Image (cartoon, rainbow, N blue to C red; front, side, top):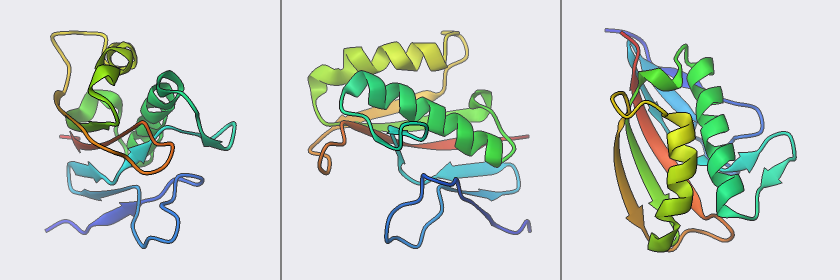
Length: 128
């Protein structure tokens, strides 16, 4: 059996929590919560459009650190603060996954998110 490996990205740590950004065993990668933190600007962006684009940039960082790309993602669970935010989020989704014949499965729920967070996600990837 393959050994589990924690994936940590500088600047994306979960403050005060003993968990990595993702974990990989063999060909499988599972992320923890991914947020729209702008690593260049140093914080959570204020608007949903910015948070969504930063979220996908962080997904790329996590995938690369785990030896994958966005093309290896097979499932994304998305949490939005408002149901009406789906259209704005979908713009960034289509930018990240432009080919409608090759998009990961997605489940989206809406509920209250902590503080100024407007979107977060978790993903599963398979590198086979």
